[in-house]
Image (tube, rainbow, N blue to C red; front, side):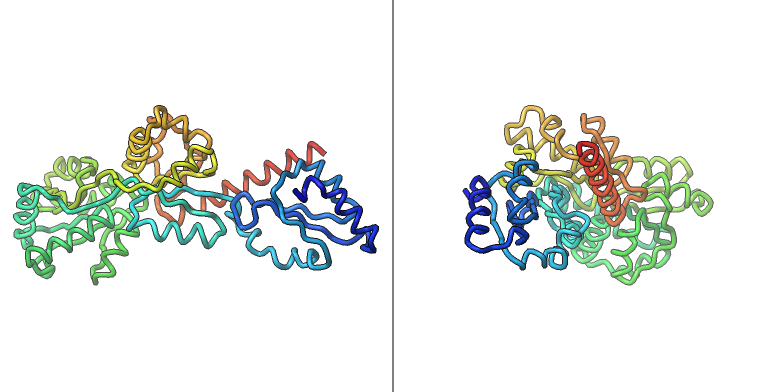
Length: 353
């Protein structure tokens, strides 16, 4: 390979008229996350390759074009360049996170471990229909997820119920994305907590809730009962309906699994507790006896404290957690963490020299 013969190549080029100062660049794994670039001159490149232990395969570029690298390496300057990130959320919800990773120069690897679907059992469907038919009786509509909003409206259409029948209800949402999903349907949220979880919403509504009022909670089958319990304890007639079910996704990308086994994933992202438990279960079904050990080589990024707690209870070390439980904040936290890691690596390299 050319890298192994770089000294001979440089020597022959100089002997046949090239200046020793002619710039040289070696590019290994070009366009990949693992890309490495070494720049020198015909006179220095052999020693640089030895010092850096630069390994083949690589493309060797010789000539003045190498000097254009500083102006052409805009992609390498992106904050997540060289970072491969596993995205575990449901495929229909992953696009926003995937797009942001790509825009910041990272390589997203989609490995959805959850999928959502409408409840299939007749008893579940009947309970949804009965709850929605009582639309005029509710004084609160409380949504805890985007999925809850989406499936709520699907059921309204299925049972032919006009949203205007909920005219007496005030609307509350746990987080900004849930509020955004409602706004897209022309509904404005009156209550949005600072901390995007059930506890924050209860704290915000404490002075607004009146004993005897009815509240409808469209949610998923794995939702926590905190909100339901707190509302009931305050004298609210809270009606919780599971408008969707969360299950383990069946179709898995074999490449993503291979990358995990090869320790080629730098960060694993979790956007809910179910993505944690489902990923571990998927790995077990794929024959991984100790999934937590398999993930030990990657940094673990969790969207919020509840997800982080689930990950830590499962034996994972959480190193990235944003201040707010949003995708935008999660991305910001990942960018900061990668910047810190690069600075640490640069300091170590400086100390060696």
